Length: 229
Image 1: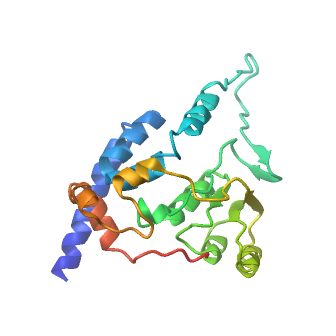
Image 2: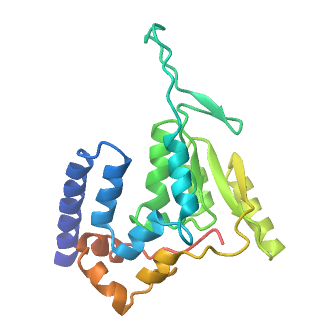
């Protein structure tokens, strides 16, 4: 009982500290720096990194930086409407949460928390084939457009089973990944020793040890798996 109480207090203090720092995040770079300070290096570089020399990753970032917001001046601001339609789904703003693998690696709530955030802001939530929360749970707990990212598997029965899960969970959009014939050569992961399922190694142990808040979060909650596969 004392152990549970102590862990609860530590978690509350950790969350309070994070919320205070989140209030000082004013752009995506600030959020990235905060994540880097809170996550063990293998975990951070998994979500932050790309494949090989990360040329495509940098070009994607540069492409977004070339997008301009063109203001509609002298048009009044009484009825501002940011809603749009993406892949046939009406959403309240021109942004949505794209599928990201293994979200419970970063926080024990994972896809549950992100899907609730998408619902709160009236936008679409995407879940990866490598999601750590089941499709049935997402389908039954949020009322917002839902996208599933599908890898086509050699085992046709597995692919059909996943599609049936999507249908039963009332998913609205299917995003078929066609450019991942083989797993990307993620050089950062090779350097940090990141693996999935997560395994500690001598090279990564120190990084995990100096991030106790993440360790408490990860090891005191139910171990996650990949329920969709």
